Length: 86
Image 1 (cartoon, one colour):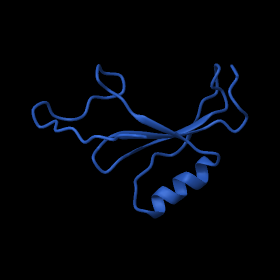
Image 2 (spheres, helix red, strand yellow):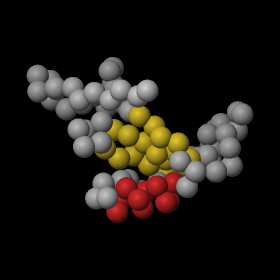
Image 3 (tube, one colour):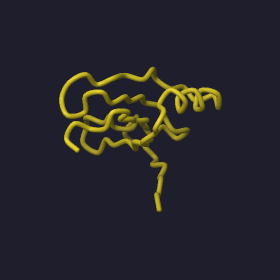
């Protein structure tokens, strides 16, 4: 089960960023990030361009952020060559 909540932030402004206390996002693993981005865009969802991590244990992975209709930051992530630490 996955529960997704829409919080009322009218008393403090925008949702906290991922780097702030209380900040969070939901990441979804996809095998083909290009196809996933294209699918979301076809539905009218604005999605950032995928970025590649070039160093460290996640080198080679791809990720892209988008927002849920209620404002939650979400992430598509793909590890086409696997993870370096696995």
